[in-house]
Picture 1 (cartoon, rainbow, N blue to C red):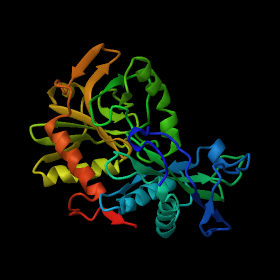
Picture 2 (cartoon, one colour; picture 1 turned 90 degrees about the vertical axis):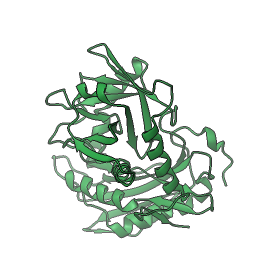
Picture 3 (cartoon, helix red, strand yellow; picture 1 turned 180 degrees about the horizontal axis):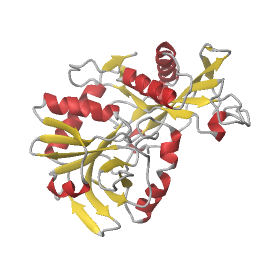
Picture 4 (tube, rainbow, N blue to C red; picture 1 turned 180 degrees about the vertical axis):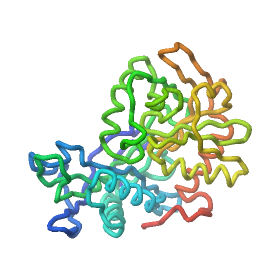
Length: 339
């Protein structure tokens, strides 16, 4: 096992031993290739560089108390990457190649899968790009699929303690009929301005509102939003929000726990009525929110008044993490042991 301070890992890139690659050429996908290089060779006119033909996924491998390594809902990551590829006219990778690539990326870098109990996991980044050259605006004829791995700690440095976020109104993450519902790099590029504004104000992440009415909650930077009140789990519904696999899982767990689940437009004025609010996604899992600052209106919404996550958020978080690490039963067959 690698000699790292596992419990102090940031959410960032750390060099590991190998990555896995596959190329689409002459109308078909080739065989998986293993590389120890951290760089890729790209044609100067590759569509990924000029026209944004690029999509990615984020997922984790977990080492359980039993020493076994688990993947969480990888098929949902495959389906989302397939939707992303179709959304910007890239050649989707096959399900078999996707599974083989992520499995190899984990096993080849097994010494970087963090020990159980450290709060860390091995993050996997499947990446699909247009590698073929075009000067006119059209899809590439060649593509590269790659998976690299890196051990990570919590996405927010606070971990599972309340974070502070800021509402950003002077920039948009995505438009309703744009690419917000698929996981492409352009969505994240357009979110950087809002993220910087939030950070400059001393907040951990931006909250985006819908781009049409500037009224309904969209996303929190790179995560989905949720609120809890009256034993009901509420999360925004919008054509510009990326469907989070973590949020999908949380909604199922909330139902299992006897909660009502609502996926609907959430007006920002509704914030005052929530008992608990949070952000969720693969990177953060759940990050409870302690304060939301609406910069333009100079209004603050406060939650977690005792400095701790709310009881329902905590219960859901503990349940989901226990399933991911194999500490509790997996009634929905979300986890697959790969070694």
